[in-house]
Length: 398
Image (cartoon, one colour):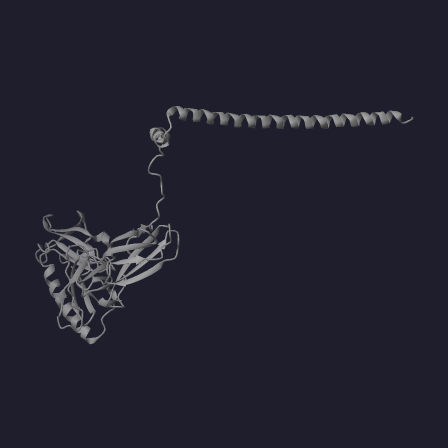
């Protein structure tokens, strides 16, 4: 984590950086327009009328309105406990109302410490950015530099590529022998300068970008396997001297549990235990293979894939119903029979079918007749029983 410099060697470097910053400050505002004056908020600000002669009375106006005379003294205007409402255009005039000088007053705060953060995407670059912890309300520039602790290289610039963007880049820091780096961000405005110096451990901050171009392929005939290919981050050196360790995790869609595989230097892995018939989510991340206490990259974008599934077998040709007719002549040749004999055989077969059909119909008819006869017999028996019962009832004396 970044920390403030405390050791003696670091303080020496700090002193060099601050002296460098003060030299810059003395140069930056010398070309400011003479009628613009800067002052601190909440302080006393004195405006002096440059065109007045000693002892002659002067009238001050603020945005065209007269200023009370009790605020003026010997041609100067004193503003006490200044606020933003006092910013604007001031002018001083002689007794005849002639303009002697106009001054635009801008109020703000002196430079303050900034909050610095750095990222190390590879061993060749360090990217640092910062934000103000206190708004100054004044035009501000930054001078940025760095020094590798105990390297003997002295102070070197941290390059700012875009004006107005609070970022700088350290190129080829060469922190092989010592990963401790001092980063200085000096804020400069018309009221002064202030340096924020942080110490970072480049090895601890080393965090590659995510792997790229992740591709997942099913393997034909293997319903539980997936082959995963990817490319290393484009920001990482392709030299074999800078190997990366890759970690792959995967899960069936809908599951909350990830399975993990790991490899060094290789940019492909085979998943052997994928869930058959289910789509899977796959992600990959990277870490420097030589610096174990460096950070893992962010995970790559999720890629979804499903293992190979055996295709359904479907008929590719329609059945040929023309066979009996197309091969009629061949049948005639192989059997040695004439068409007349085939016709007689066909008639005989038809007669057999008609005889079978007639037999079935007769059997059905006989079954129906038998059922009707059985039913009639039951009804006759019931009638006989009823008549016998009536005769017995009549023979009983009353």
